[in-house]
Each structure stands twice: as C-alpha cells, then as structure tokens.
Image (cartoon, rainbow, N blue to C red; front, side):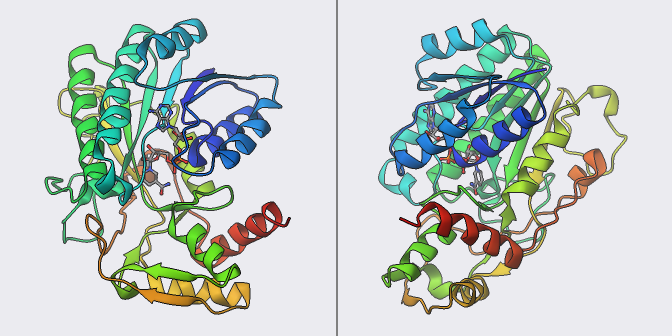
Length: 334
Ligand SMILES: NC(=O)c1ccc[n+]([C@@H]2O[C@H](COP(=O)([O-])OP(=O)(O)OC[C@H]3O[C@@H](n4cnc5c(N)ncnc54)[C@H](O)[C@@H]3O)[C@@H](O)[C@H]2O)c1
C-alpha cells in the first residue's frame, strides 16, 4: 500500500511515516519545512526518514496546487494522511491569515486531489480545539461543536465541514482525526512540555497560563500513531450505518469523525511538578492570565475509536514525560 503523508517533517507526520516505513510500506512525504519553529528539528526528522529506501519526498506548500498535484498524481497513493497544517492556538491570534491559507485552502487542495486519484481512505487531522466552549465532559464526537474559541480551531472545524460536503458529493471515504494535546520525543518546540523543559534547564522563567488552573488530556505520540495506524483499513462505509451506538458516521456520506486522546485529564500544575521532579530542578514560574483563544479543559471520550479499532492508549503522563526527557536531553546534549 502507498501512503502520501503531508506534514511528514512535522512532529506527528514524522512518527507516523517512520512507523509505516518500518512496516515496509512505501511513503511519499510532503512538507513546506516552514520556519514556524526551529527548522533544524524538521530537517533532522526528514534526515531519518530519508534513510529509508521506500521514502520519497516533495518540498512544497499545500497552497501551491501545481506542485502538490504533480507529486500526488505521480505517486498515486492509495491512502492520503493529511497532517500538514499551521498549528498552534496562540500564533493564530497574531497571524490568522496563515491559518486560512494552510489549513482551509491547503485542505481543499488535498481533498480535490484525493478525489482525482480515487483514494481508498483520506484521513485528515482535526483537533480537540473544535470543542471550544463546550462544558460537558468528556468530549464526544457526536457533541455539538459550534463555539470555537480561536481562529486555529475555526479553521479545523471548517475543514471538517468541507470534507463532509466533498465526501457526500463524491463519496470519498474520509476520517477526521481530533487529536488531544500530543507530546513525546521529537515534539513541538511551541508546546508546553518542550517550553517548560527548556525553561527549567536554562533557568529561565516559564509562562504558565491561567495560573496553571487548566487540565489537558495529554496523549503520548505512540498512542496517537497507533490509533491512526489501526484506522488505515477502517475507511468509513455507509453499510456500517446504525451498527455502532453514538457513531459519528454521517447519515449520507462515508465520513466519520474520531477523537484520539488518552482519556485522562491532567492538572497542569501536577504536570509541571512531575517535570520538575524528573529534571531535579525547580521551575521559575511566571503565572499569567488565561491566554485568549485557549480552553481550560480538554478530555476525550474514545469509546468510538475503541469499538472500531480496539484502540487502547498505553502511556500515562508520568511515563510519557520520562520518555520525552530521555530524547530531549540526548538530542540537545551539546
Ligand atoms: N500536536 C498536537 O498536539 C495536535 C493537536 C491537535 C491537532 N493537531 C494537528 O495535527 C497535525 C500535525 O501536528 P504536529 O503537531 O505534527 O504539527 P507540526 O507543526 O510539527 O507539523 C506540521 C507540518 O506541516 C508543515 N506545514 C505547515 N503548513 C504547511 C503548508 N501550508 N504546506 C506544506 N506544509 C506545511 C510544517 O512545516 C510542519 O512540518 C496538524 O494538522 C495539527 O493541527 C496536532
């Protein structure tokens, strides 16, 4: 089976590509290698993938349809996993336009091309942030999602709607993946665990929003990759309609939305305490007000994913932090 993976030099895309290559599949990666965060990290991930004979790569922007189209039409994948996006809630306050281009136009181009090459399954990254101001916990796929709090979340919600419409008209099998705060080795420098670790090691202040009174469903990268991997052969199909309770399968299209999370909410201050203990150093805490656009609590219900794939996240946050630190300290040892 041939996989086209966008965002292959990104955090999740790198791990997923590596897993597929390790299993012997052919992977074509696509990434702009943009400088939203340290490009060296993206290059280092790419270098690892590029060692595999079955890996090929195109550098390009999703918005540039010609380049994207050439690489997809030439490779003719059976499955497209679309992970490239402008991520980050905070940056979307400063640069909203980038999100519209990368996430909305970019996803539109991907869906158009998925239709053209008639993929067996198109999987697209969405986000837990689409649950926005929802109060009912845990978040379920069938809950209403009408109140996104950031432009980032709004673009992700837009891609869900657009994908549904395409799936309806062209019967493209599409799964939307709502990821919950992913962390682990090779993680993103703009995210909490990375920033806190760097700050503590360098004895610099760490900004803690809402004075730390937040909860996150931190999900370890291997669990995320495992969830995506198990879904590859589970493309939504209208024959499944009505067979699973609370299914998010569309009533008219081969389209489904799935949460992928750890299913535990971790108090941010506990998370920092564990990190301090593991590093054997205290953080210099800079308590800040709530960040605009952010949500206080995320918590996934993954019953549906479990029913479809047997998904069972294995790594709790204490173990996950240890594994992250092992990588971080080794990678930045010089
Ligand atoms: N990491 C998380 O906690 C998390 C949570 C929810 C959703 N997501 C979503 O999962 C996906 C992967 O996230 P990640 O954490 O690996 O992010 P990442 O930023 O590490 O990876 C995204 C990759 O996409 C590339 N990219 C960005 N815009 C592009 C464009 N216009 N054209 C081509 N390439 C482009 C970047 O260079 C980057 O390498 C994203 O869609 C993100 O929104 C991530």
